[in-house]
Amino acid sequence: MKNIILIGFMGSGKTSAAISLSYRLRRTMVDTDKEIERLHHMTVSEIFERLGEDEFRSMETRCLERLLGRSGGEIISTGGGLPMREENRKLLKRLGTVIYLRVKPETVCTRLEADTSRPLLQGGDKEEKVKRLLETRGPFYESAADFIVDTDEKMTDSIVDEILERAGAAIR
Ligand code: S3P
Image 1 (tube, rainbow, N blue to C red):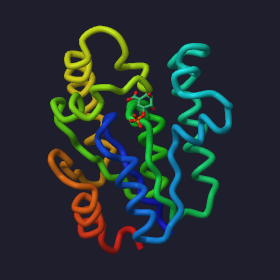
Image 2 (image 1 turned 180 degrees about the vertical axis):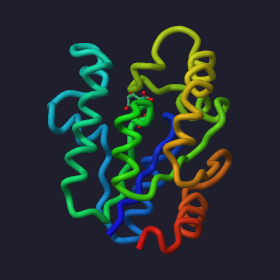
Image 3 (image 1 turned 60 degrees about the vertical axis):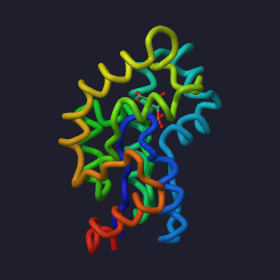
Image 4 (image 1 turned 120 degrees about the vertical axis):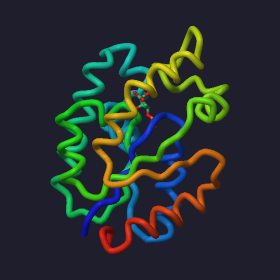
């Protein structure tokens, strides 16, 4: 069975949608950040601080490789920067149906206003950082995705309805 993989920027709602998909389809859910944290006994912030972003990105690649070795049929929520590596985009395609949850910078800023867990958004002008990162990343998310779902102003349930409708037979 194919995996369903959610990609998109921080605050795009990947985790909530993945939890809901997992309940509705009765499939297990994997979150690449959580997998990495569990394996290395460190939070993502600690990994960035102690080992650096490059090492974290290599951990993401290894995480995808491990997921490829499993039997499939899982709901996979990914870290927001994971599809930036070409190698990772190739692995995502091999893993299953890739869905880009698209979000506007204003929505991210509202949702993550008080967040301290994303090292890339700490310090300085958060709005500016989000805008700049989203501009750079948008084309990579698009090229990695089988289809795009816009998530601004939508509740998780309607996002999941749209995913299920559009993915159709591809995810069964
Ligand atoms: C990151 C997104 C985070 C996490 C790390 C880096 C990014 O995941 O992987 O802080 O580069 O966008 P979420 O998208 O789940 O917040």
